[in-house]
Length: 349
Image 1: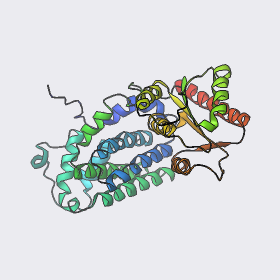
Image 2: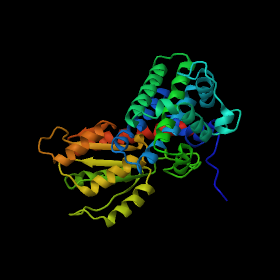
Image 3: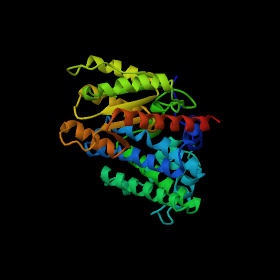
Image 4: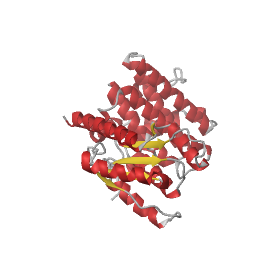
């Protein structure tokens, strides 16, 4: 039997995302959710520039759930927003008639897949010669404008209009690369959270932390593990140090990180390929509020260049804590964990 579960109306998609992430999203303001949407869109820049057709479907699949989250938080019905903009206003189309029966054989789009078909056909002549990176720029422009309408507290209709534009440009990019966006999204979010595989998402729990550390922060790691277990009753997991990178350990790292719901990273001057793998996996899996990255002597001049590059890259997307002594590290970390636990306690009611 053909799996048609992904062929849902936009209303049902928005409702599904709320059922999965609604409780988690209570910890974000609408503006913060919009910022997360911007981050997800930014993840498309590299694969589109490189024309990486394998990576693009996986990256573009994250945009719809975050757009739904922003819309729900802002009180916007995306289905209504799309109808108002692309069935009624039809920007750039003047008084021309939209033949829905000729495009989808229906009076109106019933599924998200229908919307992709309608927009692909209606804007075929406009989009056929556009470069993907230009389309991405238009997508960024619309999400930026949507974010500003939220920050300024402008009428909900203005936010709705721009969020509809975000979806339309996302669909246009998907069509350019022959991606069925509804299917790509369902493949990653099949009615459950892709990280914890639960509905509702339980990624906001805080029971077990994976600790990643370099050889020059091992003494600090020992103190962190001991203190968290003794004072915070927080279980931890970590791997022993290796002299050389071992591909065989990558599978074990993936399993270990998946077993935890939070992460702690301790960096100083030395670079480790093993730690790099651990950090990248944690960045992709854990909620940003459940991942704490500490850099010892942040302004050190003799830090490994590869580690400096990693730190610089993370600084663009995450807040990194600095510390000079182990006592300072423990004080900061315990404060952050207590604050996060208090926040999660309020979310659980």
